[in-house]
Amino acid sequence: MASGVVLIDDDVLELLRLNNGIIAFGFVMNGYPVVYPKFAVEAIGNSMTFIESNVKFIESLRISNKISVSVFDWRGNTAKSFQLKGFANVYEKGTPYFEEIIRKFESRKMNPDFLNEIADRMDERIIVPKKEFVVKLDLNMKYSQAPSPESAKPIIAV
Amino acid sequence: MKLSDEAINFLMSGNGNNVALVATVSEFGIVNLSPRFILHVDTSSVDDKIYFVSSLPNKTLYNLRKNSKVGISKWVNDVRGDVRLLVITGQAVNLTSGPKYDEMSDKAAQAFLNAGFVKRGEVKLDKPPKPLAVTEVIVEDVKFY
Image 1 (cartoon, each protein chain N blue to C red):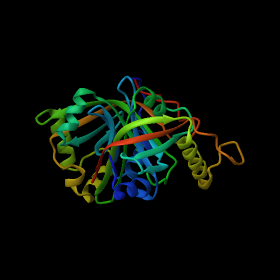
Image 2: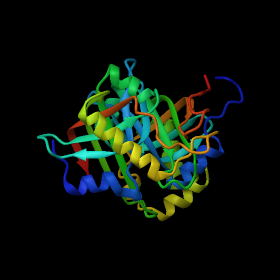
Image 3: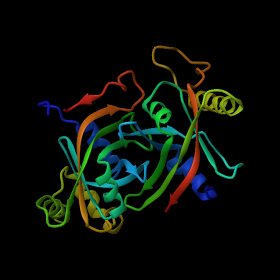
C-alpha cells in the first residue's frame, strides 16, 4: 500500500458523523447490485468494519467480495460525497478479529470516538440486530462524487 | 412488479428530496454507487418504471451498457437509529431517443432550471444540454420496511 495515503480522512468522517455512523454498503446479491445501510463500528485508515447478522449477505460476499461504500449527505448540508471501493473480509465468531470488534462495540471503544456517542443513543436492536459476523472492508480507492471537475480523479491507496 | 404508493412517496420525497443511491456492477464485478435524482415513476404498465438521467459520461451509464441489472436504494435514519429502508432491483434500459426520452429530458431540464444551478465559470445556463441517456428501470423486486 502506498505510504501516507489515508482514504478515510476528515471529509469522510464528517459525512459518517452526519449519517449517524451509517454507510451505504454496495455489493452483489443474487446477481444484482444492491445497497444497504450499515452501522460502522470502526472506520480508520483504509478500512471500515461493521457487524452483520444476515447469512444471505455473507453468502453473497463469499461469492464476490468486491464492494463499494458511499458516504454522502442525504440532506445536502455539505457539498461532499465520496465513494470508496475495495474488498470485504468476513470474520466469524471465535476469530480474534470478530471478538476484538464485538468487544470494542460493547465497551464503546470504537474508533472514531463519535461512533460511541451515536451507539449510546441509538437502539442497538436496529443498528446491530445480532452479532453473527464481522465484515471488514479493506478499501483501496476513493472518488469524490461531488459535482466538480475533480470528481473523476480517483485517489488510489494500492 | 408494482410499487406501493407509500414506497413511491418515500422514493420521491423521503428525506425531503428525490435522491436515491443507484447501484450498478461492471463486467469485472465491481459495484458502483451513485446518488441520483429520481425524475419520475411511471405506474401505467404491468411493472412500474423508474427514471433518472445521465447528463455526462459516467460509470453508471457505462456499467448499464454492459450489465442491465440495477439496484436503487433509499433510507432515512433518525437519531435513535430507526431506519426506514427501500431497496429496489430491476433491469435498466438506456433511452437515447423517442417520446419517453424527450419527456424525461424536458422534466430534467425543468428540474435543473428550478434548482437554479449555475455551471462553474458561466453566469447562467439557460438551457441545460440534452442528457446522454435517460435510464428506465423496470422494477423486478422491492423491499420496503
